[in-house]
Image (cartoon, rainbow, N blue to C red):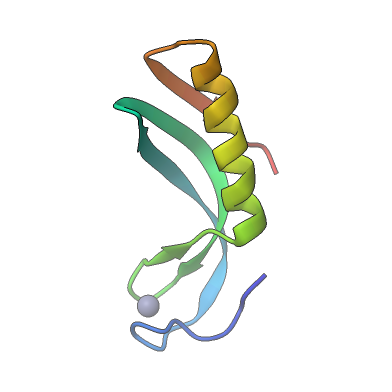
Length: 76
Ligand SMILES: [Zn+2]
């Protein structure tokens, strides 16, 4: 967990959740309740590398099933 000050505004970051979406080969992948650090001042969000890799795997798995839109919820 990266708790250093926000590189954009210098505000505090705290653990929170975000909604991640990505266009994967023209299809929409959405993940809800993705753990992220969120700046309390400007609202910028960061997803750590381990979580990003997990999202990538989820997207690949989802689209292997040939769905048009995949929405998943990550419960941390
Ligand atoms: Zn900030």
